[in-house]
Image 1 (tube, rainbow, N blue to C red):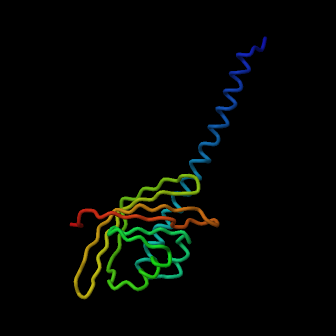
Image 2: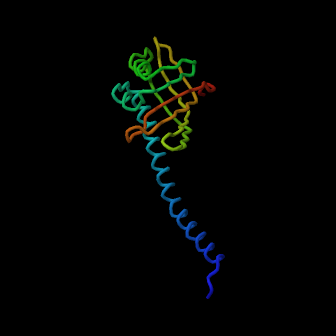
Image 3: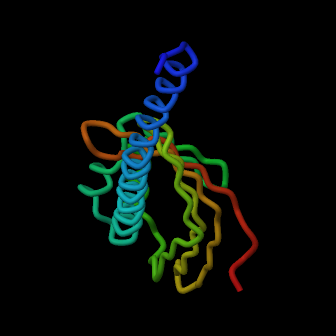
Length: 156
């Protein structure tokens, strides 16, 4: 059998196609693992906010944190942690739902809905906000780099 350029081109295309097919499952598994790790970090942050766990808050947040509230305030890491630790409201519940996560290189974009019940001076309050978080891999772990929220319709 005579080997032509067409045969060589076809063999090369098949070889490259096989290599790329072999990498896709690995990349998909890595992305799924990263998405799961970001989900765990989001949940750890929720627990740390709810429980006012200062060491955990500091461990989960990047030194460059930009934390935007739904009322327009923007805080750095120190201000955010201090605000959680000295809040006047008693947080009764904090639920996150409607999670989505997208991995983009060493960054992750996480979105969710935050619903909380709190009480200040005997007055109950329900908060429902949409949250966008940007997480970044730093030193082998996911750190919150940026967060912004927007008010949603009150919880019913």
